Length: 308
Image 1 (cartoon, helix red, strand yellow):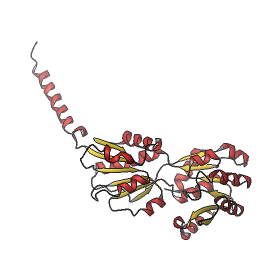
Image 2 (cartoon, one colour; image 1 turned 60 degrees about the vertical axis):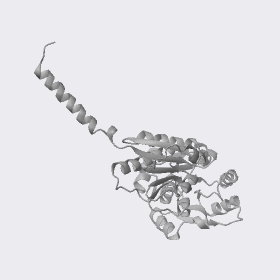
Image 3 (cartoon, one colour; image 1 turned 90 degrees about the vertical axis):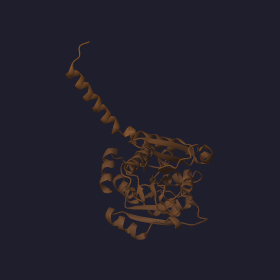
Image 4 (cartoon, one colour; image 1 turned 90 degrees about the horizontal axis):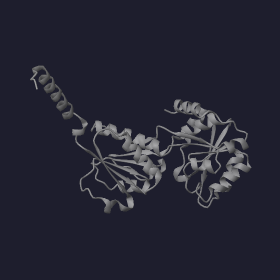
């Protein structure tokens, strides 16, 4: 084989270039360890985790456990760089970790967040949509004048906030306080006789598997629609819902984590609402109430513009 100085020099240059690329490649960066703790093993949590993994940048090691088996499944004694909890029980467990380990809580409502004394270095991605987004959703969806909501005393909305949103949307918001011993179905009948639509928000004492069917039947008999936070309510007979999907949650968690990996000084908001949301309709209910449903894409754009 003939010796060619130019070819040899080109090969050396190429080799040095490759060495330089590898040396500065993220593959050689320090591994970032994330401990993910699920309250239980369910498809919603697993879909969010899949989206976290698919959208993370850099060299990351994931330790994923269920809460009930967390201690005995914990094989790696090293401290994680970040803890992510999914669900209320996992969030409560995450409060026990050392203050110097950041924790992001997800799959908790605003009410649950307020009840569990958030600590320093703990951040929460709330499951709820902002209340004003629900109200704007109804404004664009229905030709109505008043909205009824049922809340417990501990979870009630501030009157000044209700008045402020009413002033912007032109819709009256009637907040009924549900007390212990009240009958949820009778409460719904009472508020719907005086208002045009019922907005259901997370309240387990009011809306649960034992009461939902009766509540939806009561609204149907009064020819009044129900707008919800839950797609399962829509399947059961509510008119519509806006909600955060597991995929939405996973992508937003990944975005928060990526910023923390890229900049060690970055701290997420103490609490944040889900940025993205889905819309679901029940066409059968709309037809029975003679309601013409808008285009979902147009409605999404309107809501995004209303609530940023």
